Image (spheres, helix red, strand yellow):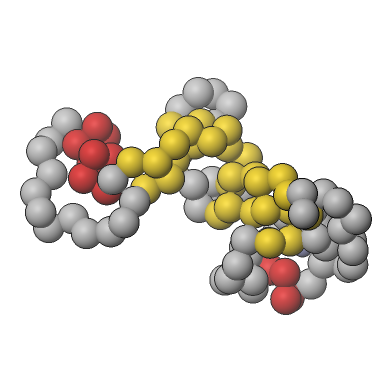
Amino acid sequence: MKRQTTYYADDGERLTYGGAMSPATYYESSTGLTAGRFIKGSGYIYGFAKDGSRRSVHRIVAFKTQNPSLHKCGAKCRNAKGHNCECSCKGEFHGIDS
Ligand SMILES: [Zn+2]
C-alpha cells in the first residue's frame, strides 16, 4: 500500500525531513552545552522549514495515495493517535487535536 509521509511543525508548517537524533545530541547542538544523563527519551525527529531553519517535527502523517477513501474529514481524523490518513484533508488536520 502506497503512502506519502508528510512532516509538520507545531504551527502546521510542512517540513522537509531532516533526520533523527538522540535527545542528548539535540540538546547539545541547540544549546552548546553538554547533555547529562538526565535527558531521557528514545529520539528526536527534526525537519527543515522553508527558510532553512531546523524545526521539531510535531506530527507525522502517512497519507494513503493508492485509492484513498477521501471521506469527509472530522473529529476522528483530528483526534487520531496513529499516522495513517486517507480522508479529504489529505493529512493536513490528521492528529492535530490529539
Ligand atoms: Zn482529515
